[in-house]
Image 1: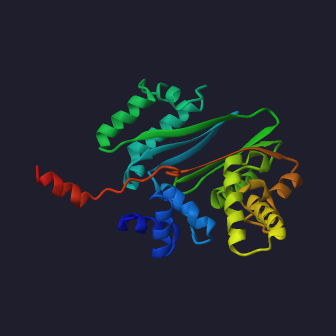
Image 2: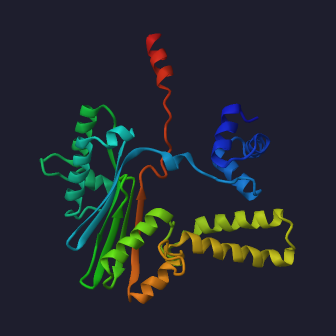
Length: 292
């Protein structure tokens, strides 16, 4: 039987009622992720938000240098430290180092030396010791462009979201930035239909099918209804099929055609996405220390 804490957690994630949350947990042996899916399939979950979307703090950075561009995320434990001058200098140092490197993995990146001669791994550990909380390079991507290609990028003012785009062809600088800002705001999961993760799509189809059946739609029409909903979903989660925020009369792919360019690569980093955030009860921690 699900305990109170699990029920509360599931309600916070899905906005489901107490009894619905309890039943979902009972049906899935207290597996939170499975319970969220169960609620979605029943059409009960209004917002299947994941705690991981609010995970760690830090900075998402993006820079362009000649024919190379870099996007990365460096994490801190608190937002306060993310605004620390030493932390921001470290992020800049890592960014300027990696953009000229040929490394492809985090392991290689951590062993790369920055301007002061220390490795990125050592620099992160050193500032951890000085500031008093863990600092870590989480991820990065480096893109290189050819002569007939163009970069566009955007970093939101809070430094929590960064977007990097690579176009085939030459795009107006302002339009390129506008499309990058659009991607930052609308958070499309994929560039286009070809890049949609099949496992993710199959899971969404399953959920849409269960919802359609639960609505009592005629069996002979269910498949057509589901396909229509899948098509609508794909138009919402693929960047090129979204309506442009600054001009709702056009989709992104229409803008690309009008400007004779193709969008080849799309990368969007949001600080903390996909990482489960640990909630610390500092009062309880201090009380426990006092007992020793």
